[in-house]
Length: 322
Ligand code: UT7
Image (cartoon, rainbow, N blue to C red; front, side, top):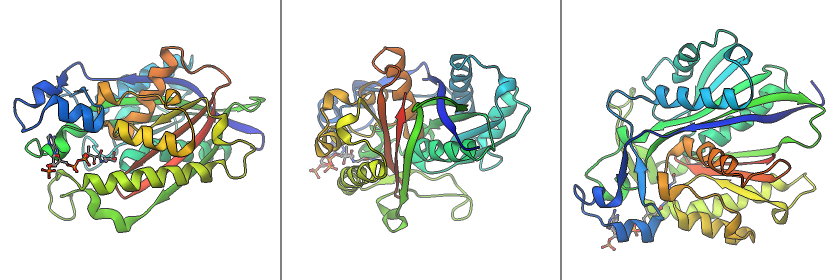
């Protein structure tokens, strides 16, 4: 399908109702609002209600993205959910979402790249669409990280939150330079011990809890992200100075600022939601995208850089003309 471009036709998101502030966190773990704000920028996070699952968050975000694209469920021919917190070990959360939304065509599957899941998904979506495998693809990043946190470990539990963000990616001809321009993905399994979950079906037969050596992850994050951004521009006639908005994974305000500085991009051009949502893993990029589209910052024709880095390590970046 030469000439077909993958265009983000709709975007939507969902955050659980319950908000937990830093002050509330400090009532049950040895931390403080000052420490969390100074080291991370986070002020609050949303936490899913009892009985509210990753698939529920995903469906709410997915419905909004489909409506935003001006489509109906019958138009969607592929569902991809990026998540590290699926409802069950199997089947894929995407299949549950497909059924829950009433989508009867095509296929549905999950991808697992932790915090980079959405950026991985965007690259997969682009290739499936340009290869003719799908016309209107629903890509969702959805997480209930609250369920895999050790709530007694202050070095991790203050950082994460729950949420979901979704896009409809459509194949269009005659879209000009609109759509996904380029993507790059990387991973490095030798860094497993810096960020992982200490359980799983094949090892412990439990779900496990998040374990992280934060300082080490921080250093790798800034360097890896700056490198992948350089790579994603290779082969295009664009450069970081052309970026209108960086829409990054929201792990830590200091990582976002440091990465922007390294790229020579003003921090004013970074969409920042970490203060309100914490780190929502695979959901954070589409949540940030939806926020900045809704509030009018991102406009048609803008050049967006989407980037993320997470457990694995995995990392990746996409350039998108809005
Ligand atoms: O999304 C996946 C990618 N994840 C990331 O990118 C996360 C990357 N890492 C980070 O964001 C930061 O490393 C953290 C926010 C996790 C930690 O910030 P830091 O500036 O690297 O702090 P640190 O780990 O060096 O800890 C400094 C001190 C320690 O105390 P001592 O040893 O100096 O006495 C910690 O025990 O802060 C202490 N500490 C806390 N104090 C209050 C750690 N967590 C807390 C806490 N409240 N929640």
